[in-house]
Structures are given as C-alpha cells and as structure tokens.
Image 1: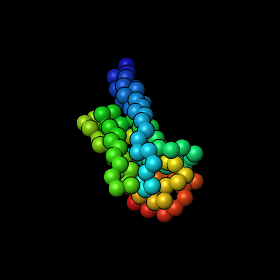
Image 2: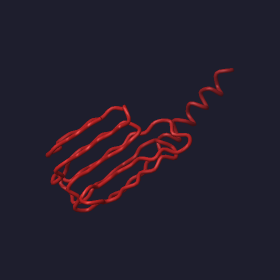
Image 3: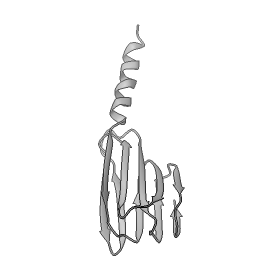
Image 4: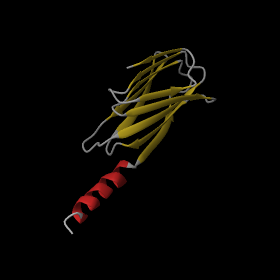
Length: 118
C-alpha cells in the first residue's frame, strides 16, 4: 500500500503538465526568433501570422512581440515548470528563422529561407 501516494503524485504532475496555452501574433513578420526552454517544433503553413501552442510547462508563459520585422517569441518559465513543448506555426513568407530550445530537441519542417538552430 505504500506505493499509492507515489502514483497519486505522478498523476498530479501529469495533469498539471498537460495544460495548453494557445495564441497568435506578429502579423506580416518577415523574420522569427523563438527562445524556449523545452522541446520546440516549428512548421511552416499558409497563414498571415505566427501561431503557437504551449503544452505543459505549468506556470510558463509565451510572450510575442514584433520589432523591426522580427517576431520574437519567448517562453518564460515560472515556478513548478516540469517540462514543456512549444509548437510554432509560421507563414511561408518568413525569410529567416532563429530557433533556440535551451538544449532541448528541435524539429523543423517545411521552412523556407535561412534557419539557425541552437
């Protein structure tokens, strides 16, 4: 019977980690920079703005800003962040994409223009 609290604790983390945050921003951006502390997936599709979905992450938040043609997406981690995954959808017109996942995995598909990943 001693294993039950451990299972309950694992389920609690799983439920907290499955929260999603969705949004869009940066209409008509020509370049994108993404800074994330978790896994990062970036896909290009037919759209006018940059979309994102953050899964997990607990108190993590996504902030988007447009500066000098650059759409800058930053995932700020809060307390209790276990792990997160960020899915970013970009317009096909993006000329340059800079991706930083803080050492976590990066997947990029259908991107045109220059791509820098670290």
